[in-house]
Image (cartoon, rainbow, N blue to C red; front, side, top):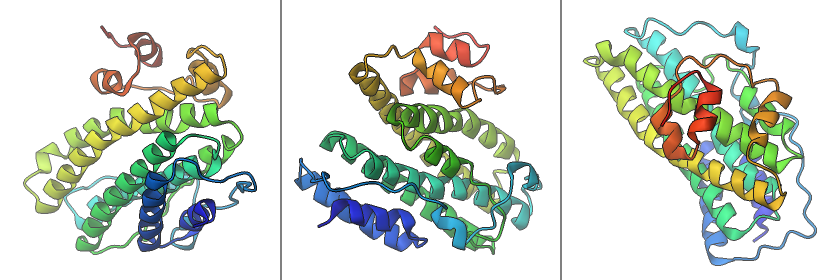
Length: 271
């Protein structure tokens, strides 16, 4: 099996069924092979995200405001936005294996497991979207996560800081706020189903951020850098000063953030 060629095919495919099949193949192969030949392999920097054939990509400011969650279309806009994050996260997890071929088996298995989780999340959301009368691609999306992954393609430490330890960790802050907004509509069957899916995603995402945190710290040690470089990296990508009104202290602590880091990210008490 050409492990990296299969990964590349999985990342570039716009079919979730294909991504799922190839991700499972890679996971099984990696589980049985500690050393995977990569000497002749050179990762490409992808010019466009795999979902470009399905979705209209617009600037974040051009996205419609998501509201009216008591209507099918209103709720579908929210479900679609979350499904898009999960779809993007599949490719990002696979790319973390594909792009940094020098990493060991434990690293590869971690991110292949994350990709499998993201596929499972996406499929749950896609099913709900169809039940609401819509499909993935019916609403515009932005390519922020894809852009961030390609901007960090040549620096593995930056990738671990920006994708799992910044963007995915931000999801730990946002998800409880979404659940709070939906709470007074939980008697509506579709809202109740979405809340159940978000509960599952939230638990899994803590583990994903834990993995990102672990490998970020491994890379810091390998490169003889203090983990405080995290804030220098955020500054380099112009996201250090972003307003964070709802820092989820307990979830971030579970995921590996120190109280010093949490207090610097948001004006909150942590002990």
